[in-house]
Image (cartoon, rainbow, N blue to C red; front, side, top):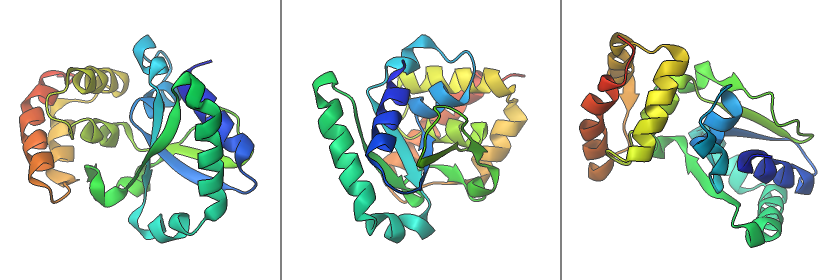
Length: 185
């Protein structure tokens, strides 16, 4: 069983009500794409984006936080965890990213309703840490999976909403030509 599935099934086991999570990072690649690279299955965490309009609701959901804490305790001996839950205004995404969510069919969960952003939005999220080799490999995989052309990426870059942090803007600028290099012509 891949690590993302293990983490999410553990979280689901500790939940007693429905929770919607929008995954990104390597968990979204592992669970959202057939033939994902083997390395993504070994990621030790699950990252999620919380739409800005839902941050307060999730923050007030004590049952979710209790389940998250219980899952992390249970998973701690294996080094797995779920802690990276970012408001959407802290992640590079297109302005209309919520209109393009993709439901995830696996793993089968009782309480978790799982989604991932559109592939092009996942590529944008991979541009937040500069020219990180792992993120560039993931971006290349995503571009191949959806046949993302340079023009499709340029359009997404133009629509990107970049968090107001100089280091994220600099990372985006640094990554832009590198991601274009991995686009499908």
